[in-house]
Length: 541
Image 1 (cartoon, one colour):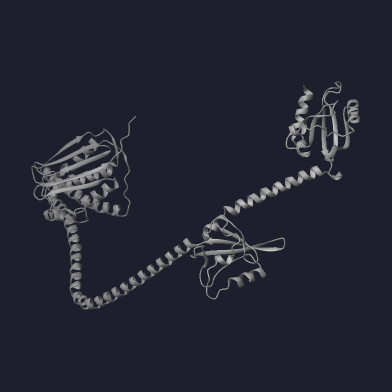
Image 2 (image 1 turned 120 degrees about the vertical axis):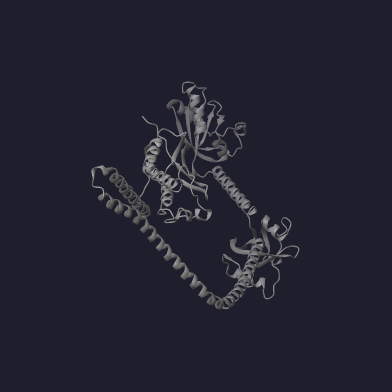
């Protein structure tokens, strides 16, 4: 069993002639594919069915040697085929005289091997046929027209696309002359050009100084082409290869591009003319309006002078306001200090305390004015920034009310309404307190006796809404759009003390907190200021 497996392996794997032979008759029992090809047969069955064995006459002697020594080797000639080869014999079972023999043949090239030469020739012919088939496929399916002609211009070959380009049926171009594909043109002698190329063939692209080259179809129509020439020699005969590309689409695209450029150029010229006409009209209008502008210059200068005067008045008003705001509390301080000197007796202590309180209030008023000026300066310089921290809103509101309680007029009161707010929120307590102080101070200042100022606060969705309502003088719609400007005071409160900086500071602080301020007011019906500020809510441990 092992010997037969070894024989099968050698038969299938060796590249040389290998087979099994009967030791008695000398007939072949099996032959591998290499042996079939070497002896010139089409199949193993055809080789095994031949009546005469191809084994050499030396077979009996080689068989005896193989049985005695285990192998035998000799150079032999295989019958009528004339194949000279090195023969190797190996008994599969030396002890069994009837066991098949494994034989191997290696052709010897030095001794001449017609069959091997024929095999190599056959393979060369097959390779040539394959190469020719590939070449035919490339030419037949090329995306350009290919035409081959001889020296006389007779077409000997043309691919499928060339027939389509020139409108000929299949093989209709063969045996036609190349001149039939070239339309006649004045001053052009195609035959002379062909003879010139035959005299000095070169690989080159044809061009025309008069425009695109043209080809002529079988029906006489012409179309633009690009042509490149090549050549080759076969049996000392020159053949010229023409590569033809139909550039109809290219020409149409180029003509469309030229037309588009002409259109664009025409539009550009028209636009330039229109621009020139417009410039002339503009210059004319400018010249005509110069006199009018000169006449208007007096009015403009007068308006500029008036604006300068208004600016000066604004400065004077600010100086006057500031002077008045400082003079009033200072006068109160001086007056109270002088009156205190007139009450030296002990029993006059209540009068002294009343004037001391008046001095304290005046000093606080001066301090508030200075604080407003300093706040504006810090805001303008960018020195004020929001710093969020934990705060109790109810406690902050209560402290603020205590701060402004001294500003309440007889019968005035502040009512608060805090709704749905967490016990603690994260905001800048200092800025929020200053905003509330300004809003409540204005509400109390510009409201009459026995009036009510309402403070509402609500929290929802991370936004704190503060609303301060008063029953005061109100502000006209014309003045409302200037209320958040520096030093602006509404005409309805011009006779009351104030710097015109409170709402400006409120608006800037609201911006620092990321919020907004809205003001609604009507003359004689009071004012409502609504502040909306985002806040954060942190859980407490």
